[in-house]
Length: 318
Image (cartoon, rainbow, N blue to C red; front, side, top):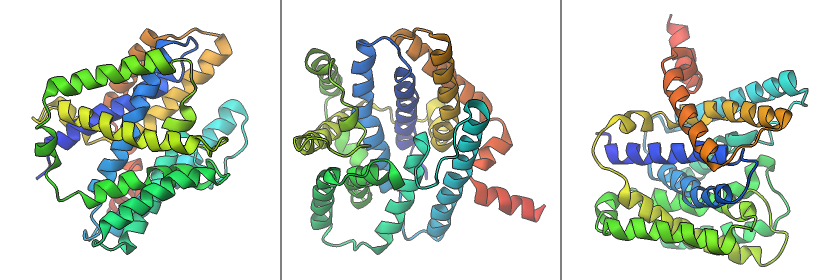
Protein backbone atom coordinates (compact mmCIF):
# COMPACT_ATOMS: atom_id res chain seq x y z
CA UNK A 1 0.00 0.00 0.00
CA UNK A 2 1.34 3.40 -0.98
CA UNK A 3 2.05 5.73 1.93
CA UNK A 4 0.63 9.22 1.55
CA UNK A 5 3.32 10.62 3.85
CA UNK A 6 6.11 10.03 1.34
CA UNK A 7 4.03 11.39 -1.54
CA UNK A 8 3.30 14.52 0.53
CA UNK A 9 7.00 14.90 1.24
CA UNK A 10 7.87 14.47 -2.44
CA UNK A 11 5.36 17.19 -3.35
CA UNK A 12 6.96 19.60 -0.89
CA UNK A 13 10.38 18.79 -2.31
CA UNK A 14 9.40 19.12 -5.96
CA UNK A 15 7.86 22.50 -5.22
CA UNK A 16 11.14 23.49 -3.57
CA UNK A 17 12.95 22.39 -6.75
CA UNK A 18 10.74 24.68 -8.83
CA UNK A 19 11.05 27.49 -6.30
CA UNK A 20 14.82 27.12 -6.18
CA UNK A 21 15.07 27.42 -9.96
CA UNK A 22 12.77 30.45 -9.95
CA UNK A 23 14.92 32.08 -7.26
CA UNK A 24 17.87 31.40 -9.53
CA UNK A 25 16.22 33.70 -12.08
CA UNK A 26 16.25 36.64 -9.65
CA UNK A 27 18.15 39.70 -10.78
CA UNK A 28 17.96 41.36 -7.36
CA UNK A 29 19.84 39.77 -4.49
CA UNK A 30 19.27 39.64 -0.76
CA UNK A 31 16.41 37.47 0.41
CA UNK A 32 16.44 35.49 -2.84
CA UNK A 33 19.95 34.22 -2.07
CA UNK A 34 18.96 33.30 1.50
CA UNK A 35 15.89 31.36 0.39
CA UNK A 36 17.86 29.74 -2.45
CA UNK A 37 20.52 28.53 -0.02
CA UNK A 38 17.81 27.36 2.37
CA UNK A 39 15.88 25.17 -0.08
CA UNK A 40 19.08 23.75 -1.53
CA UNK A 41 20.20 22.66 1.92
CA UNK A 42 17.52 19.97 2.08
CA UNK A 43 15.47 19.46 -1.08
CA UNK A 44 17.96 17.52 -3.22
CA UNK A 45 19.49 15.65 -0.25
CA UNK A 46 16.01 14.53 0.81
CA UNK A 47 15.05 13.57 -2.74
CA UNK A 48 18.23 11.48 -2.96
CA UNK A 49 17.44 9.87 0.40
CA UNK A 50 13.91 8.97 -0.77
CA UNK A 51 15.27 7.55 -4.05
CA UNK A 52 17.53 5.28 -2.04
CA UNK A 53 14.75 4.28 0.33
CA UNK A 54 12.50 3.15 -2.53
CA UNK A 55 15.19 1.37 -4.53
CA UNK A 56 14.25 -2.30 -4.23
CA UNK A 57 16.80 -4.55 -5.93
CA UNK A 58 14.51 -7.53 -5.27
CA UNK A 59 11.79 -6.11 -7.51
CA UNK A 60 11.31 -7.97 -10.80
CA UNK A 61 11.03 -4.59 -12.53
CA UNK A 62 14.24 -3.19 -11.03
CA UNK A 63 16.39 -3.59 -14.14
CA UNK A 64 13.57 -2.29 -16.30
CA UNK A 65 13.36 0.79 -14.09
CA UNK A 66 17.08 1.47 -14.60
CA UNK A 67 16.67 1.11 -18.34
CA UNK A 68 13.67 3.43 -18.24
CA UNK A 69 15.70 6.11 -16.44
CA UNK A 70 18.44 5.84 -19.05
CA UNK A 71 15.92 6.15 -21.89
CA UNK A 72 14.34 9.21 -20.29
CA UNK A 73 17.78 10.78 -19.81
CA UNK A 74 18.81 10.26 -23.44
CA UNK A 75 15.43 11.30 -24.83
CA UNK A 76 15.17 14.57 -22.92
CA UNK A 77 18.84 15.36 -23.35
CA UNK A 78 18.29 15.23 -27.10
CA UNK A 79 15.10 17.29 -26.80
CA UNK A 80 16.75 19.96 -24.63
CA UNK A 81 19.82 20.14 -26.86
CA UNK A 82 17.65 20.35 -29.95
CA UNK A 83 15.58 23.08 -28.34
CA UNK A 84 18.76 25.02 -27.55
CA UNK A 85 20.00 24.69 -31.12
CA UNK A 86 16.71 25.98 -32.53
CA UNK A 87 16.04 28.83 -30.09
CA UNK A 88 19.52 29.95 -29.10
CA UNK A 89 21.77 28.60 -31.87
CA UNK A 90 23.62 26.58 -29.24
CA UNK A 91 25.82 23.57 -29.93
CA UNK A 92 24.56 20.06 -29.29
CA UNK A 93 25.47 19.07 -25.74
CA UNK A 94 27.40 15.86 -25.25
CA UNK A 95 25.48 13.03 -23.62
CA UNK A 96 28.39 12.85 -21.19
CA UNK A 97 27.48 16.26 -19.79
CA UNK A 98 23.90 16.20 -18.45
CA UNK A 99 21.76 19.17 -19.41
CA UNK A 100 20.45 21.16 -16.42
CA UNK A 101 18.24 18.96 -14.19
CA UNK A 102 18.93 15.77 -16.14
CA UNK A 103 22.01 15.08 -14.04
CA UNK A 104 19.73 13.51 -11.44
CA UNK A 105 18.51 10.83 -13.84
CA UNK A 106 22.01 9.82 -14.91
CA UNK A 107 23.25 9.79 -11.33
CA UNK A 108 20.27 7.69 -10.25
CA UNK A 109 21.21 5.14 -12.91
CA UNK A 110 24.71 4.90 -11.41
CA UNK A 111 23.40 4.50 -7.87
CA UNK A 112 20.80 1.88 -8.71
CA UNK A 113 23.34 -0.19 -10.60
CA UNK A 114 25.80 0.16 -7.72
CA UNK A 115 23.48 -1.13 -4.99
CA UNK A 116 22.88 -4.31 -6.98
CA UNK A 117 26.45 -5.27 -6.10
CA UNK A 118 26.61 -4.01 -2.52
CA UNK A 119 26.02 -6.37 0.41
CA UNK A 120 23.22 -5.75 2.86
CA UNK A 121 25.52 -6.56 5.78
CA UNK A 122 28.24 -4.27 7.14
CA UNK A 123 26.26 -1.29 5.90
CA UNK A 124 27.79 0.86 8.65
CA UNK A 125 31.20 0.43 7.05
CA UNK A 126 29.78 1.06 3.59
CA UNK A 127 28.00 4.21 4.73
CA UNK A 128 31.07 5.56 6.51
CA UNK A 129 33.19 4.88 3.44
CA UNK A 130 30.63 6.59 1.21
CA UNK A 131 30.70 9.75 3.33
CA UNK A 132 34.50 9.83 3.22
CA UNK A 133 34.46 9.35 -0.56
CA UNK A 134 31.78 12.03 -0.88
CA UNK A 135 34.02 14.52 0.90
CA UNK A 136 37.29 13.56 -0.80
CA UNK A 137 35.78 13.44 -4.31
CA UNK A 138 35.70 17.22 -4.34
CA UNK A 139 39.48 17.26 -4.70
CA UNK A 140 39.24 15.55 -8.10
CA UNK A 141 39.12 18.28 -10.80
CA UNK A 142 35.99 17.02 -12.56
CA UNK A 143 32.68 18.85 -12.18
CA UNK A 144 29.60 18.27 -14.35
CA UNK A 145 31.11 15.75 -16.77
CA UNK A 146 29.26 12.45 -16.34
CA UNK A 147 27.62 14.14 -13.31
CA UNK A 148 30.80 13.14 -11.47
CA UNK A 149 30.78 15.47 -8.46
CA UNK A 150 27.08 15.12 -7.67
CA UNK A 151 27.25 11.34 -8.00
CA UNK A 152 29.83 11.06 -5.23
CA UNK A 153 28.65 14.05 -3.20
CA UNK A 154 25.12 12.66 -2.79
CA UNK A 155 26.03 8.95 -2.82
CA UNK A 156 26.10 8.63 1.01
CA UNK A 157 22.61 10.13 1.24
CA UNK A 158 21.28 7.64 -1.32
CA UNK A 159 22.87 4.75 0.60
CA UNK A 160 21.52 6.14 3.88
CA UNK A 161 18.02 5.91 2.43
CA UNK A 162 18.71 2.49 0.96
CA UNK A 163 19.99 0.96 4.18
CA UNK A 164 17.25 2.45 6.37
CA UNK A 165 14.30 1.55 4.15
CA UNK A 166 13.07 -1.08 6.62
CA UNK A 167 12.96 1.40 9.50
CA UNK A 168 9.73 3.15 10.43
CA UNK A 169 11.23 6.61 10.02
CA UNK A 170 7.87 8.33 9.84
CA UNK A 171 6.96 7.30 13.39
CA UNK A 172 10.43 8.10 14.68
CA UNK A 173 10.59 11.55 13.07
CA UNK A 174 7.10 12.45 14.25
CA UNK A 175 8.28 12.11 17.86
CA UNK A 176 10.08 15.42 17.46
CA UNK A 177 7.81 18.23 18.72
CA UNK A 178 6.61 20.17 15.70
CA UNK A 179 7.36 23.52 17.30
CA UNK A 180 11.02 22.50 17.54
CA UNK A 181 11.12 21.75 13.81
CA UNK A 182 9.43 25.02 12.87
CA UNK A 183 11.70 26.94 15.23
CA UNK A 184 14.76 25.09 13.92
CA UNK A 185 13.94 25.92 10.30
CA UNK A 186 13.38 29.55 11.27
CA UNK A 187 16.79 29.63 13.01
CA UNK A 188 18.46 28.18 9.91
CA UNK A 189 16.93 30.88 7.71
CA UNK A 190 17.93 33.65 10.13
CA UNK A 191 21.45 32.24 10.37
CA UNK A 192 21.79 32.16 6.59
CA UNK A 193 20.61 35.77 6.42
CA UNK A 194 22.82 37.09 9.21
CA UNK A 195 26.04 35.20 8.47
CA UNK A 196 25.98 34.01 4.88
CA UNK A 197 23.71 36.24 2.81
CA UNK A 198 26.67 37.75 0.95
CA UNK A 199 28.42 34.42 0.39
CA UNK A 200 28.24 32.30 -2.75
CA UNK A 201 27.25 28.89 -1.39
CA UNK A 202 26.47 27.27 -4.73
CA UNK A 203 29.67 25.26 -4.70
CA UNK A 204 28.72 23.92 -1.25
CA UNK A 205 24.99 23.20 -1.34
CA UNK A 206 24.75 21.83 -4.91
CA UNK A 207 27.79 19.56 -4.86
CA UNK A 208 28.24 20.27 -8.56
CA UNK A 209 31.82 21.58 -8.70
CA UNK A 210 35.17 20.46 -7.39
CA UNK A 211 37.04 22.27 -4.65
CA UNK A 212 39.11 25.30 -5.52
CA UNK A 213 40.35 25.57 -1.93
CA UNK A 214 41.22 22.73 0.49
CA UNK A 215 38.90 24.18 3.18
CA UNK A 216 35.89 23.37 0.98
CA UNK A 217 36.09 19.74 2.11
CA UNK A 218 35.16 20.93 5.58
CA UNK A 219 32.29 22.91 4.08
CA UNK A 220 30.94 19.78 2.39
CA UNK A 221 31.14 17.96 5.73
CA UNK A 222 29.04 20.68 7.36
CA UNK A 223 26.68 20.56 4.37
CA UNK A 224 25.95 16.92 5.21
CA UNK A 225 25.14 17.88 8.79
CA UNK A 226 22.94 20.82 7.74
CA UNK A 227 21.14 18.63 5.19
CA UNK A 228 20.50 15.97 7.84
CA UNK A 229 19.16 18.40 10.44
CA UNK A 230 17.02 20.49 8.08
CA UNK A 231 15.80 17.32 6.39
CA UNK A 232 14.59 15.93 9.74
CA UNK A 233 12.72 19.17 10.42
CA UNK A 234 11.02 19.08 7.00
CA UNK A 235 10.08 15.42 7.43
CA UNK A 236 8.63 16.22 10.85
CA UNK A 237 6.27 18.95 9.60
CA UNK A 238 5.16 16.98 6.51
CA UNK A 239 1.48 15.97 6.76
CA UNK A 240 0.70 12.26 6.90
CA UNK A 241 -2.88 12.13 5.59
CA UNK A 242 -3.86 11.80 1.95
CA UNK A 243 -4.78 15.07 0.22
CA UNK A 244 -4.51 16.68 -3.19
CA UNK A 245 -0.75 17.12 -2.74
CA UNK A 246 -0.42 13.35 -2.34
CA UNK A 247 -1.76 12.91 -5.86
CA UNK A 248 0.77 15.28 -7.39
CA UNK A 249 3.54 13.95 -5.17
CA UNK A 250 3.31 10.79 -7.27
CA UNK A 251 4.20 12.80 -10.39
CA UNK A 252 7.52 14.33 -9.36
CA UNK A 253 9.41 12.90 -12.35
CA UNK A 254 7.02 14.65 -14.73
CA UNK A 255 7.31 18.01 -12.94
CA UNK A 256 11.07 17.64 -12.50
CA UNK A 257 11.64 17.20 -16.23
CA UNK A 258 9.10 19.54 -17.82
CA UNK A 259 9.39 22.53 -15.51
CA UNK A 260 13.00 22.99 -16.63
CA UNK A 261 11.83 23.99 -20.10
CA UNK A 262 9.76 26.79 -18.56
CA UNK A 263 12.67 27.94 -16.40
CA UNK A 264 14.95 28.01 -19.43
CA UNK A 265 12.47 30.17 -21.33
CA UNK A 266 12.08 32.54 -18.36
CA UNK A 267 15.83 32.98 -17.99
CA UNK A 268 16.24 33.76 -21.67
CA UNK A 269 13.34 36.23 -21.66
CA UNK A 270 14.62 37.99 -18.52
CA UNK A 271 18.10 38.25 -20.02
CA UNK A 272 16.92 39.55 -23.38
CA UNK A 273 14.54 42.16 -21.97
CA UNK A 274 16.52 43.17 -18.87
CA UNK A 275 13.59 42.42 -16.56
CA UNK A 276 14.04 42.67 -12.80
CA UNK A 277 12.83 39.66 -10.81
CA UNK A 278 12.79 39.76 -7.03
CA UNK A 279 11.91 37.15 -4.41
CA UNK A 280 8.18 37.90 -4.48
CA UNK A 281 7.97 37.54 -8.25
CA UNK A 282 10.00 34.33 -8.07
CA UNK A 283 7.53 32.82 -5.59
CA UNK A 284 4.58 33.83 -7.80
CA UNK A 285 6.34 32.32 -10.82
CA UNK A 286 6.94 29.07 -8.94
CA UNK A 287 3.25 28.76 -8.06
CA UNK A 288 2.25 29.55 -11.66
CA UNK A 289 4.67 26.92 -13.01
CA UNK A 290 3.31 24.30 -10.64
CA UNK A 291 -0.23 25.13 -11.77
CA UNK A 292 0.89 24.76 -15.39
CA UNK A 293 2.44 21.39 -14.58
CA UNK A 294 -0.87 20.23 -13.12
CA UNK A 295 -2.56 21.13 -16.42
CA UNK A 296 0.12 19.48 -18.55
CA UNK A 297 -0.26 16.28 -16.53
CA UNK A 298 -3.59 15.81 -18.28
CA UNK A 299 -1.79 15.27 -21.59
CA UNK A 300 -1.25 11.54 -21.90
CA UNK A 301 1.60 11.76 -24.41
CA UNK A 302 3.66 13.99 -22.11
CA UNK A 303 3.16 11.52 -19.27
CA UNK A 304 4.16 8.58 -21.46
CA UNK A 305 7.37 10.28 -22.57
CA UNK A 306 8.57 10.22 -18.96
CA UNK A 307 8.01 6.45 -18.98
CA UNK A 308 9.17 5.47 -22.49
CA UNK A 309 9.33 1.71 -21.88
CA UNK A 310 5.61 1.66 -21.14
CA UNK A 311 5.03 4.05 -24.04
CA UNK A 312 6.73 1.78 -26.61
CA UNK A 313 5.16 -1.31 -25.07
CA UNK A 314 1.66 0.12 -25.42
CA UNK A 315 2.34 1.22 -29.02
CA UNK A 316 3.58 -2.25 -29.85
CA UNK A 317 0.41 -3.83 -28.52
CA UNK A 318 -1.78 -1.43 -30.49
